[in-house]
Image (cartoon, rainbow, N blue to C red):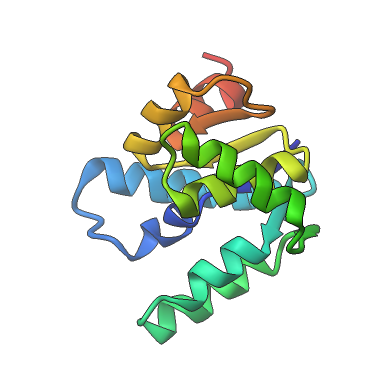
Length: 148
């Protein structure tokens, strides 16, 4: 199983854990990273994830996320095909950085793109011709891991 995790999911662990949804999404990240560490899943990193993470003003968080991204078995480097695809996705209403992540995930031929961004998931459901399955983290864990 090949996964591309949106950066917002990596940053969930730094959010207020008193919120039940945030706590659940943080635990899902831990489960997914457990799958990666045991070889049940492969994590994809990309120039887009690295770039977005580099823009975080909180150095400690940036370093921790970089450490998690280092578990990736695949790295997607910049390619004009990715940019072209992201522009097409933007024309369908997806925000530029999100479009770049989706294009990277498609380029990597992942099985799943996983995010905790509700607005993005809503927009992706309206987008035709996606080449990958896109889930919010909670739906993914229930449908694809627990098979509920």
